[in-house]
Structure formats: structure tokens, C-alpha cells
Length: 166
Image (cartoon, rainbow, N blue to C red; front, side, top):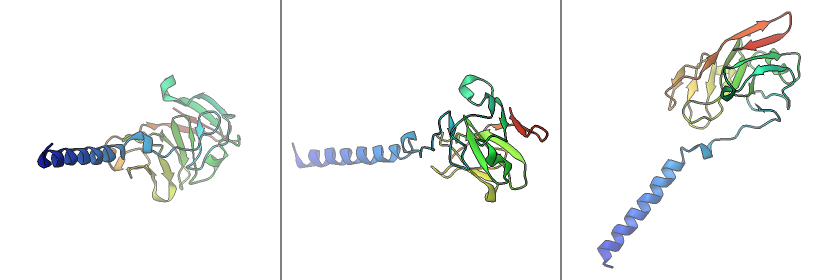
């Protein structure tokens, strides 16, 4: 093998290694993993308890339309009684803004699926993996995400102390 051919092969090999490193830097395998509780609830962003006690209906997109009710007297969802707190249940992040309004959006960043965090002080949802930010309606503030988070409607029944998300 000639020196020129050898150097060419080394250059191509080094380039392939660098390319692989760059591409793997944006893979889902590097995404932070939220804390898992027992029944599909995930912690972080205010967290939920370890059970789905107090949840009725469907909170998982793969099982059909999102349509569930949370009993806010349940310890699993008690954080939602406090302004600025949020919980993740199934595929949805439910938050109570600093102004006391309830909001709900899909938990997965539209860029690569990382669970977003609610930042009450900034009135936004943030993807800690690549820095995308979304407003309270799920609209993209800045990328790399290009699509909004799916927004769900919320309805609070003060007499029953329940929150319906659909």
C-alpha cells in the first residue's frame, strides 16, 4: 500500500468516526430519562405520587383520544392545587400556572420526544435535551423543535375538586 493511499484511508476512517459521534449526539439514546413511578406517571416537573389513584380515563395517546379526570384530593395529584406546579401522567403534562389556570400539553418534545419540563417562572415548557421552548399553549418559542406540542383542554370542577383533561 502506498503512503498516499494509506493517508486517504486514515482520513476517511477519522471522518466516519467524527460523523458517527455527531449523529449519535442527537439520538434518543442520549435523552434524559424521567423518573418513572409505578403506573405510567413520571416525576420531575413537580412529580406525581407512585400510583394512579385518583385518575379515571385515558392518559395514553397510543390507547386512543386523551380523556381523563384527576381527583385533586388524591396525593398523586395534590401538587396541582399549588400555583406553579405540574405533574406528568401518562403522555400528558398538566400544570397550574402562576396565575392559577390549568393547562395540559403532550409531554414529548416534538423534536425527539424528550419529556418537557414546566417552567412556571418563565411561562413555558422547556426541553432540557436540545433547548426547545414552548409557550403555555404548546406553540414553539424556539427550536430545534419545529412543531407545537399538542394542547389539551382542561376543565376544573371546584365542587368535586377534579380536573378534566381532554
